[in-house]
Length: 133
Length: 279
Image (cartoon, rainbow over all chains, first blue to last red; front, side, top):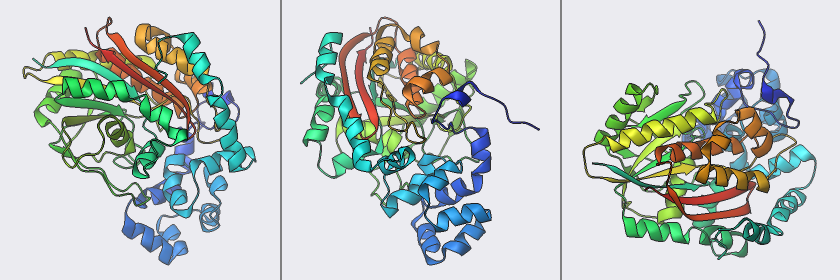
């Protein structure tokens, strides 16, 4: 028994959601998927522990959910699209998650992204043929 | 005969829908991004396509991870948007074209593309946001739509080359449908972005522009790259750009570019818009 190795394993700071991660986080992702239904969101809110047990989360996974440790949930292999179903209604954006991974504030994370806009129009003019308003 | 008149590419991230909902499209942060769709919207008004085929990935609305089809095509009379977990009001349902869908499925499977056929298919932001940004909101959408979902979420995902080949098969399938239909294909997703891991937030403008040029005039450049190579440059979610190759493969080699637009950032993402007209 061994998990395959992949060309993408060596990309630093990058966790590709593949069979291994999907396998290990399946119960968490399944519970988050259920939150597409409002009735399930309400059932969770009424008794989070019981709801986690219903999906057979491990003790460690349950702890992450009850603590709303969003970064820990992602590190546990959960897919971000599924985690978002839990996190976004609780006020966490994907930019908050990205910032947390880097250990910087969301404002600093957004500012780094906005740097991409600097000189962009000039770059596109050099490239040629781009719409520029 | 059905005729594929053109192809469009666009990002599909949730922030686009949020900006529309919140009336922010003319705010400084968003204005340049949204204004760059103008010529595409004008072209669509002039051409009045009957059917839009939207190539996108599902983000956990219709498909859960218990069953993940590599390629899935909607074969229904109607497609519904639904709550993805954060309680947004769904947009109006989209009319499908079941006869055309089943023709496409038969043709593609006949060409050895093993499609998953879906007689019920909820469509998420990956499908909805491109149509909202191109057409505005409608209670009755002025076209029929066919969802074509590509797995870009749970690896193994199809290669860029396979996506390009699927597009080529789709082009043949469209051309062999006997009804007189004007068809437009929309390749959604990308460009560079990564949402998780310490590398979250990467946007590689140079790689994005190279992808745009490749999709216009040299699809082999992108199609020859492995998913690991694309992820290294464009990020784990940026690999969605392989869906642009489905769009490109469906068009003729000599399709000409009528409009290209690039903006960064929108949320965490580099965003490219292309309009290619078939010759």
